[in-house]
Image 1 (cartoon, one colour):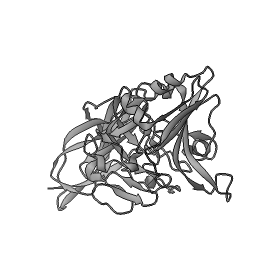
Image 2 (cartoon, one colour; image 1 turned 180 degrees about the horizontal axis):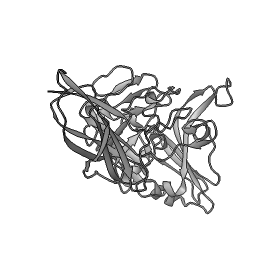
Image 3 (spheres, helix red, strand yellow; image 1 turned 90 degrees about the horizontal axis):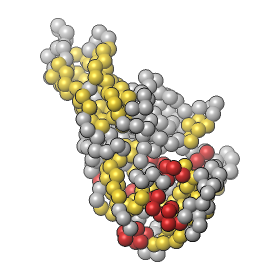
Image 4 (cartoon, one colour; image 1 turned 180 degrees about the vertical axis):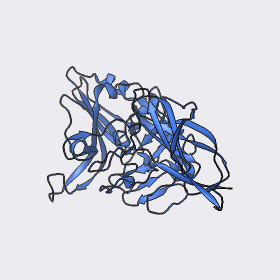
Amino acid sequence: MTSNATGPTTGALHVVREHPLCAETPATQLPQPLTPAPSVYVRSNFDTPVFDATHRITVGGAVDAPLSFPVSDLDAMPQHAVVMTLECAGNGRLGMNPVPPGEPWGFGAVSTTVWSGVPLSMILERAGVRDGAVEVLASAADHGPRGDANGEGNPADVRFQRSMPLHVAMHPDTLVATHMAGAPLTEPHGAPVRLIVPGWYGMASVKWLASLELLTEPFTGYFQRKRYVYDTGEHIEPVTTARVKSMITAPVHGSHYEREVTVRGWAWSGTDVITRVEVGIDTGSGETWRDAELGTAASRYAWTPFLLPLVLPPAATGEATRAVTLRTRATDASGAVQPEQIIWNRLGYGNNAIRACTIHVVS
């Protein structure tokens, strides 16, 4: 299946916006269990901030002992690695109708790689979390103007900030990360330090981390209540856990194949492990569904491989090819199932609807 995003594909990334940089993993790299580091998707809300060797991370708010330490101190602390599928909440926005405002993401704003660093819980324990703390607010070093920060038409300078519940921050797999794919972070991916929040959409994994603050009340900042929210027109809810989803990586949409075809792809969910992937097959006389074989995911947070070998009928008499439409539907252990229809929302987040892949079978 191919991305619908527009913009140049340089080989390593498919750029959907140059300033600030937003770029997808190319379709040619999506079949890889671990996305090559140069092809891990990039989402930036503002221009890349400039750091120097004096950059320090501060920890404050509802703590017993506020901290301030250089990033280099993290290297001396116990390290932990997590294999994780990271997906932008806006992935698939161009598949919505009408297309909501926002970055013009096709379906390539998702990647899987190894993140490593220090468990966030270890840092918070050193600071001493006070009773009454309910959230951890992560503030990035990047900032810029937003026209609706103080009401429509009233721009203000906004720093990128997101909060998470304390229990998510204290999970042993939530990281203050300094490395990706075994190498130091690059600038587009948040160097020198970022958060990694497994199971959540990418906005929670704050890049270019500057400070952490323990809050006694839920955060109500711009990127928590005005952006990265599901706004249906009737209610607003912050975007958090990644919805259950699947994609076909082979066969390729629009291509020609012999009758023997193996459907392959990935399924993932931020809520729980994948327990089932079904493949819908329509050869022209109605759709039937079959269970695919599931492989082993690299971790609880990494996408699960699936495959289903098929022998498809030949083209009808007098026809050169037969159009066959394939679809996949994933289910996780919580019982969540990919929806048939897109769950439309004003800002275009969380599109996990079933997608179609049409191929042409030659006689």
